[in-house]
Amino acid sequence: MADALILVVEDEPTIVEVVVRYLQREGFRTVTAGDGEGALRAVARERPDLLVLDIMLPGLDGLEVLRRLRAGGSLPVVMLTARGEEIDRVVGLELGADDYLTKPFSPRELVARVKAVLRRTQAQPAESAHTPPPLVVDTLRLDPATRSVTLAGAPITLTSREFELLAFLMRHVNQVFTREQLLDQVWGYTFAGDLSTVTVHIRRLREKIEQDAAAPTLLQTVWGVGYKLSGPRRVP
Ligand code: CA
View 1: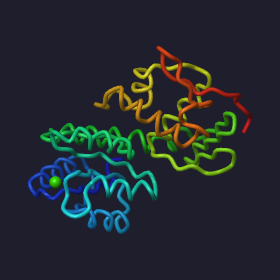
View 2: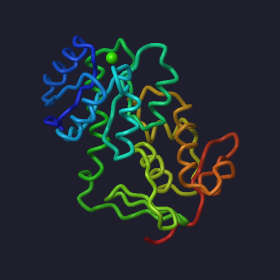
View 3: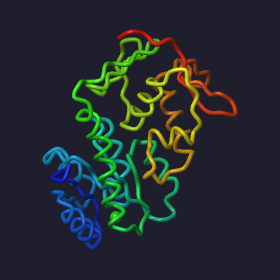
């Protein structure tokens, strides 16, 4: 993890300088981009392991950059937001940012978040020498080895956090979890978000896996308690 390549996307030179200095001090390699187009070019050229992405950028803003990145994969992203960008913050998470920090932020805190996101996203294949077997519930099939999901045989595209939420629920099929438990289990204690983050992700997952997101049969609400993934577990 220490030599991971971090792409820092921000147009304010003083912030770039401080962030780069702190990341390099921890052994990370860094590249920088000062606008959205430059960020997309740098992703294609440098293949970074993680992006630190400011929302306010000249040209394509950070949200548009994230939207385009998410169309093509699940590169880990830590967003930077300014105060008063509450809506942007939620949208950022809906688009699948892995974490965010509000300006002004402590560079030390940013480095901690970067490490936490890398640990979480990189640990999955390495943690178990044996590739975990696919999970199958009803017509949903999730393969941890390839991080792919199909619904009745048709591939569906999930953000990295949606994938982790679904994987957690599939591992614990027919068990009910509160939003607090899901935030703790899927996002982890370092995450600064609130419970509405869970609600947003449940809604997004439903839009992708349910025939009718308004009348979910798989990802069910248990009133007054929380959520469960319901269905027969099948042998892969
Ligand atoms: Ca900026």
